[in-house]
Image (cartoon, one colour):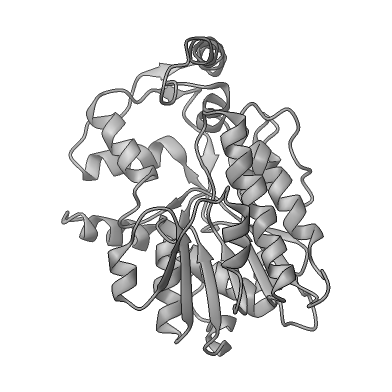
Length: 349
């Protein structure tokens, strides 16, 4: 059970000037609200207009990540940058992922350098170590994946490397750290939970493989904690996280399909019971990828090779390094997170 005994180190952080990219996103929006509670002066960067954040006093910059000059300029008069923005997904043109995730991140690094920002906290992904094998309790010594059949993690590898290499960058000796939260979920999640529920209602969920794979998830409040803890930890004299990457999870690996079926049941949706072998799912994904690419079909294929492996194999991680260096301890358990989700969806436990 995650510990709730220790006060987070970030409680010692005072008001500061902060830029949060990806302000319209699930993580970015929750992070901004927490920073406002701490008395920070916050700028938000995203593409879609955010009236609610504006009403809270957030200085919004509506910029595309590919606009290098504007992204760089947004870093002016800032103490800390939280770079959570990215183009995500399992399908799409490599050039679009590259423009957002690589060019956009380099523009943030350039802005931090030119305007002498003190700290850069980058939101990466565990997918950077995807190797088409089961990952069971691996730590940060696991190397970057190669030949990843998906442009999102491929471009995130490049971006993460650039952020870590920028640690100590003059003239302001920028401090950087990368976090790899795994499958963020919680109330008002616009992606993971709604997608599972929608496919469940339509009877489109299939258990890939034997259905006994163990996976880490990360409750949203814990991920926000991790980001602010990382900011605080960059000032440590010992076990400083500068220039390093860290896995972030709830530290409670769950049986993926058991958890999904429990979620469906609580929402009055029939459980997923039909199975498809990993080999068949990967072969299907390969064929669908060719069709979608050849015919230039919009949207994601119903299956890809990358998704097939993610749905069938273990992927959970050892977060000892985050506990030691970031003083990160997940405060909201998986059970408590589910209760909060059900309450937000007006359902009983």
